[in-house]
Length: 327
Image 1: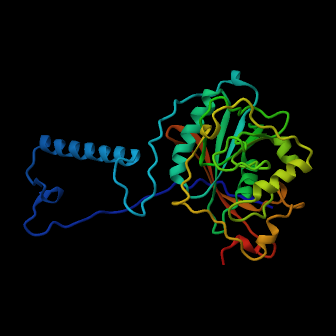
Image 2 (image 1 turned 120 degrees about the vertical axis):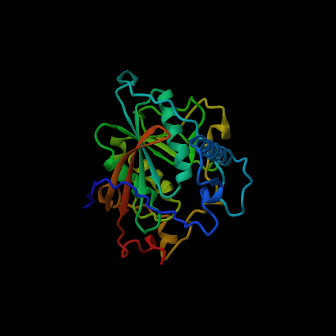
Image 3 (image 1 turned 180 degrees about the vertical axis):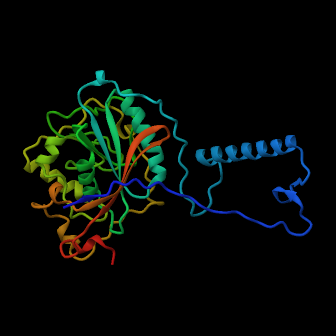
């Protein structure tokens, strides 16, 4: 059984920057300004420092500052979304946007404002859930999606399994309620990287009823990859027809892929029997036996866009899947 500890823990930052003035230095700002300084001069100094700080932030965000070796790639400054309140006239359905996540904060800063504005422009009622894995096991995307489904509440009736590094650009993509069957938004013809016919990763929409019919996703996939391929076989086993976009002519420009593999390498290690197990269908595990604990649940705004951040501790049976740990 899973358990939930929903006490919200806010981050705290403490620190002191004390420095004694050496002999002969008897001024403010370590000698830059004299001890006897007028309020006007002090105001000018503070204004200058503030201007230089804002200039540096803008340059470093847009990439005009020369990159240092080993530094993370610079991202474009995300434009702030318009604050849009949902209107019941948008329709009866509400989307739970489930984002499995770990440590990719620079991508999250772009993702949440972009998706909130994109879906609001399309008049899609939605709530964004960041399912943040905070345990010490290897990343498990499928289990996090299962957790997001269980924690998304009763005010949403369909889900989007959505990668944090994939931003839709074409406004004609359909994020509406997939009543007929699962709808693969990031189809092989449109995804920037993956083009095989059975691919269902990136962005996939399902009604909650259809996701339960599949018993969710397998919890046996620790590390990167293969959980989507197993889920494709679950969809077929449940008798569900897969739908994909039609009439989209933007090709590889349909999405913006913001993941940089040179900076964030994927965990593609295959440990113990994982190499053989990764191609098998998990007939027993899934939504109803995912083991986890909710460490905290926070309602936050990123760039003005609201979302819920769930800090999740997954559990692993080392006898069943010893490859969940690195050692």
